[in-house]
Length: 111
Image (cartoon, rainbow, N blue to C red; front, side, top):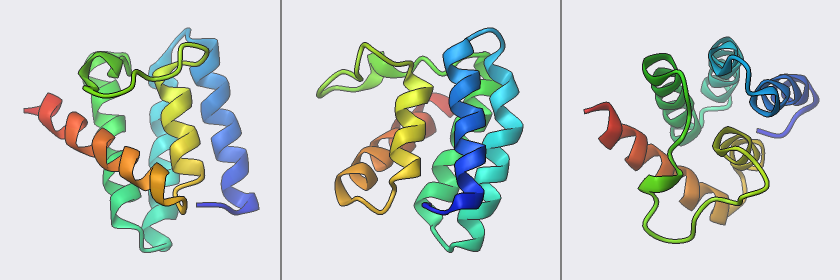
């Protein structure tokens, strides 16, 4: 999802994630990124962005680190910041694997 148009959206979402005041402000930005991923024909990113938006809407947070069995998410950034970094570089095969883990965890949490 690398392009200059999406960079502004990522920057806005990361600012919201770092601010931490009202994470639900990230939902419209995530949905705009989702539309961009639909246009790019990337079903994994499209789905994981939808699931992330729904999770934030339902829980007013994006605290999912406890649900990862392997390596914990980095301590120096929020879960949402880390997630956004993965989405921003979703062409990387290792990032895609982690995005698939996010998809599976968010799907499980939605049930």
